[in-house]
Image (cartoon, rainbow, N blue to C red; front, side, top):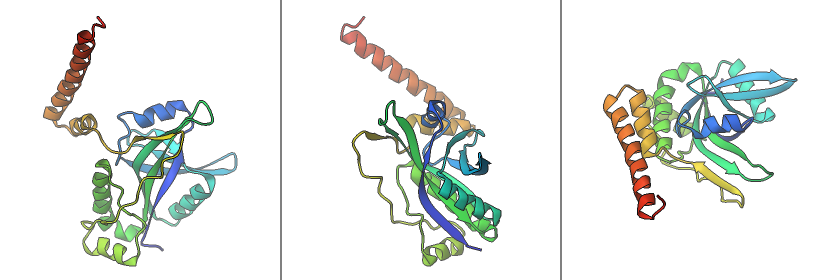
Length: 212
């Protein structure tokens, strides 16, 4: 059994409903997803399921089949949201994204879990650590009990006409929302204060321009 497999992989959304969830506060850059492998109409489909138990996207059949095999072999599977994008063609356009998919042997869970947490924090900042690691890199994860992180990064996809990256990191508001979810009441109040300040600034600006 493999010790570790890591890769960045694109995914699709089913409809605009899932896309709306994807660009909202329930799906933040760096968020962790479980992978649910299914067979639908005879076709392998691996779903990304967020922490609120919602399916937010799926992988193409060939990669879905690879994931189902790894899962059947007992490998641990998880994914971390790297970015969300929008492509305007064909009309009316569609949302999609990319995740870092990590698979690891169950014997290495104690080292891999803190490693994955570290990757999540880096992605939240807008960094894309290289996850396709060679033997030396995997050794370093295990020997450091997950405290080691790769310093090499992977660039975002090249810009293409009609495609825009919608989310690549956590905004200040999203960071505050996340802290409030962890039970930090101060951040909860601060997040509301920040939002009210933004609204007040918009109203002041419109009033200054004579809109009302």
